[in-house]
Image (cartoon, rainbow, N blue to C red):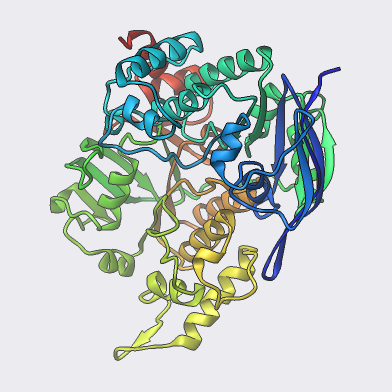
Amino acid sequence: MKDVLLAIRGLTKTYPGVVANSDVSFDVKAGSVHALLGENGAGKSTLVKTIYGLVRPDAGSMTLAGQPYAPAEPRAARAAGVAMVFQHFSLFDALSVAENIALGMEGPPPMRDLAARITQVSRDYGLPLDPHRTVGDLSAGERQRVEIIRCLLQSPRLLIMDEPTSVLTPQEVEILFRTLRRLREEGLAILYISHKLEEIRALCEEATILRLGKVVATCDPRATSARQMAEMMVGGTLRIPTRAPSPGGETALEVQGLSASSPRLHGTSLKGVTFSVSKGEVLGIGGVAGNGQDELLLALSGEMRVAPGMVRLKGEPIGRCRPSDRRARGLLCAPEERNGHASAPDMSLIENAFLTGKVREGLARNGFVSWAGARDFAERIIKDFDVRTPGPQVAARALSGGNLQKFVIGREILQRPEVLVVNQPTWGVDAAAAAAIRQALLDLAANGAAVVVVSQDLDELMEISDRFAALNEGRLSAARPARGLTVEEIGLMLGGAHGMEVAHVH
């Protein structure tokens, strides 16, 4: 019987209008990988922020290794042996690996000693890192290593990981899992949050499932199917996306030799990207984060202008057209960064509905905004895409990440695009919401739209794509029929043997 490292009893946290955690109790044992599962808005983030000292609970208690534990801030949590790798990395692109790690430590050693320790620890755990490299030049997988090594240098007893594989290739996931299993064998407890249920089954021996802030079930993932866990999370039957036969049709979007410098300091320039997508077709584009996905979206949406003939919509060159002109012609885009790019955080959902719906929904006449029309459009998005919010007047930043994602994707789909380009459509959303979004994309294609889905979730791309291509360092592979592609073939397309590079770090 493993010893209980962290015991949580009756934790409750309420915010205005919502109970985030309600009487939550469970144990995390030393030397175990314990999954925390739940839909968006189920209370997972609030719970781990409480454990890490970012949130003060209203009621309840915790003990760590038998001692009362109530961290007032993350520094106190780290001092007690609790470390966390967040879903969004907190790294400075312009600094080196060692400099970034030093910033996250209390009283770091001299830089030369720290660099030697980083090299040693990263080698010991199979996550090679060069301490002198600039973070802006690292892949997403390597950036995650920086965060993990930063935690391991603190010799933690409990490591919290939030969606750790959302930015990794299959080969990098395998490396990460080897490291986590080794840490478990050394007695470290890992609290693991992920929406990828097959990963949970492969890695975790216990799971606690939250719904609407309450613990509703516990299970052994090794003996429970992914579908059973998903249904525990939603409290009902899970619908699997199905697609009608593609009607097939003429080419809707054609991209020819698209080359463009990234407008971002550490971005990835596009190099001769060529593809086409027909009406009724879903083209899946895979790739590890930072390989040109954002730049491709900017070039297609019109936020980044390119030579006229590089992008054609229904045969017409649109490379110099502005975003509003492209929308009017039927090309709509939903970028990955939902808070700040896809939506204005401080504006209401009504205002956010107006921002992209103005042209196609006819929400402005003679220079005057139709606020009644914008409200109706926002309410339709909320209803059709099950956006959990008190109402359309709420600011976008008040929504959970998954609910804002549903709003952003729904807003574009309901405008009946002829071509929809979407980056990470189900990033950070739970199994039921992901199934609903994928179904909406398939329905859009079945009704004759051309759909381009850029995603790091390979299972998603294989489920909904007719053809698959991979972005690597700004270059796009030739598209291949998605049916029948093996994980190995996909991994090699994605990374140019990305997983093999690990051995060459000096």
